[in-house]
Image (cartoon, helix red, strand yellow):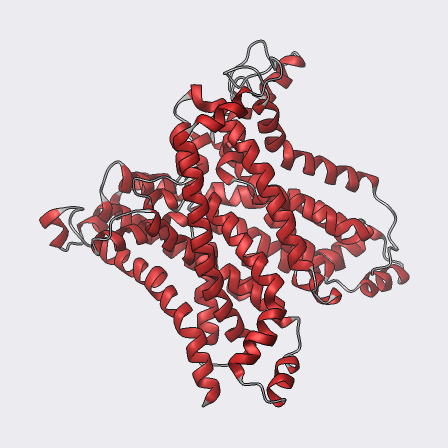
Length: 271
Length: 283
């Protein structure tokens, strides 16, 4: 797209790769130690083993927490995606009083420290006599993900001319049918991407979950509880390696989806 | 009329959710800061006592100041380290830049807790840094030189935030019209001067967004300092967490949380004067 007139800068390229290495360093580190045949995580490495991976299959509590996190992620992301899409469509396709206030307010959960939101929700649930559980964590995750979904959907819709929808309505389709047959299909890649992003966020979320969790643990909460026992660290690290590889795949897929079908010029602008 | 109905149907559920699960909890928290105690009858007594005690408590004030300082350093280093990469991607990476950018963003979406854990292990006595120092003969024996310090907190947080800072700077740089740079060159401006007079000022919105993206949440950070910070690296968020989990003094915790919220809103207000709030979302 852009003509490159400036001279090449080999040192800038080197810096890029150095920084990329820095960003991947912890991931590489965990991967290496997940195959290391030693119960302590220190250099030098002792030799190759798969016993930690085999050990993962026997760790009942851990597997239970993984399932909890998966259900929590699916449930809260589904709700967040529906609510965020409604708001995203409304703010891009309509003008209404209080729109700016809503957009401003809904951006807050994205930047507010989670400790503040966490204790606020904790007090609210306690005052109402609601027992802490995966449900309360799920409600917290809905709040932090709705704004994300809204912005992703709004960005996608902003790239498409509303005349598509107007045309459908001129041709006799009613609004809700147009929404279902035109607007939602246009938004679909963004919806899937937003859902996956919400899922990843929920699956990984700790700072908020910590305050809202009951007796059943999510994976991050379980991992945190294991950090106090050095003997379990290799298992945690191995699990970490697995999760990281899986989440890398999910993210690459959802990023690809977000770009897919986006008008070329717009996609770079929105990013 | 039809439009109003459609807006009402679309907006009611998200608005109610935001009110019930975001606005109301913060209001309830604010009210809780006036309660005398966490449990039983104490909870029904309202008092200004916590506020008076808080105002006199210099430990809390210093801690807040120190947290703000950590947030400031973290944000500054993140911007400084991310800028050259954003610059490289925007101007010199050619057609590969999308792939190269994605490559930087991917680690940011893997588990936060686990990456912090990895840093904790890497900074410890058996970790990579000590191994490297030992191999180079710079230290005699393995000892955790960085773990459980403020420095460890800053390194880990900068690590976590770099991709989120690179993104807005990159998009600001990308929006610069290349003809401006060509015009500057045609008029005889040397590249460094073009950078200082054209590129840098035009990238400022992205730089500011990047700075605040880091600064605001870091102010209330508690997980990273808890894992790698030790006593000397502990932050304001750690005390709030402690009031709710160990000390069980919810009113004081609420008050501290409220103070934190006040500062965050203040900085957001500041930012909204100079940038767009949605830039902070990084979408």
